[in-house]
Amino acid sequence: MKYKIAVIYGDGVGPEVIGAAIKVLKALDLDAEYVEIKAGYEYWRQSGKPIEDGALDVIKDCNCILKGPLMTPPSPKSYRSVTITLRQVLDLYANVRPFKSFGRTSKKVDMIIVRENTEDLYSGIEFKIGSTAITLRIVSERASKRIARFAFELARREGRKRVTVVHKANVMKESCGLFRSAFFEVAKLYPEIQADELIVDAAAYRIVVAPETLEVLVTPNMFGDILSDVAAGVVGSIGLAPSANVGDKHAMFEPIHGTAPDIAGKGIANPIASILSAAMMLSHLGEVEKAKAIESAIDKLISDGRVLTPDMGGIAKTVDVANEVVRLARTILQLQH
Ligand code: ATP
Image (cartoon, rainbow, N blue to C red; front, side):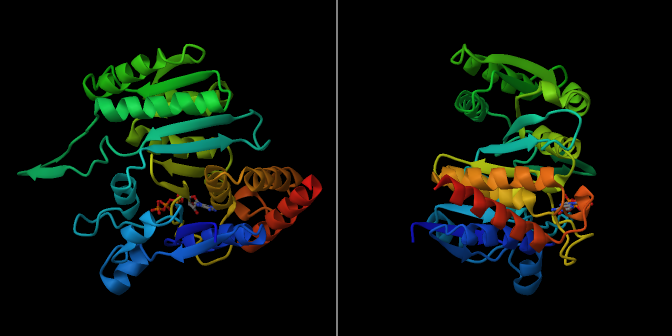
């Protein structure tokens, strides 16, 4: 086999949507072995562990990870988020989240949020002093420059004209101030790309009222997490938004949505975010033809409007969408040969 792909199906709708993505990959004859890694809330309830022993070694031996959403109970006594742990341990420092309107809104949205993935309020450094709880916000120059460089390189590769740093440096003068100044220092290396800035609250407003004016946003961890859900709402459904977590050695691909417990097990979750995450994985592996065929298939599926899940106003099941993507992508690939 050419590729070894670690698969974490996840909780809630995870097995349904990741199952659909793997169905598409298999139908397009990707030369890959799929290695399942057990993790998440259900696994923890059965085994007392949030992820299988030895999982990290298996993952490091794979070309990349395809992952569904995982549930982490909010109680301080439960385990630390497996997703955040994997991002930190594998140093997956860039979280890339493209948002496209696919013709479903009056505005043509085509924006990418690049979220720093290892620091900020998600560093996991928390404690209590008496009855006061403290979470430390860690922002290093190294990580801030690294994510800024990643965003500019992405913009250059994709032919984008502008990169916008999102921050709250007017209030958090140290941590956001550092993130902002690292960005503008890196920007000098990319004179052909316009570098500008938005305060996070203004960024949230802009994403809602004028998303078509945004190209690439680069944000600290928590702002990116929240703004991504806003952007997903703007483009029509959180079930449409894929993501990549990329480091220098490893990469993990996952839908941005959560476990959607309200619809889990009903067979109606939208698999498009997971299938597009699989397409991002294919591009990362250099399987560009297959990746583009999937993306074009999804464009067509959405513009046809016949096979859509209820979150997009349709009545189709998860499996119907996967089958239709397979049919369209195969046609596109056959036409090319
Ligand atoms: P978690 O605690 O895992 O984050 P959540 O319910 O808080 O779960 P999401 O899972 O992101 O957050 O769900 C938010 C809303 O979006 C829910 O109404 C859910 O049903 C819907 N949703 C999420 N993913 C999908 C999907 N793939 N298809 C359709 N609807 C979805």
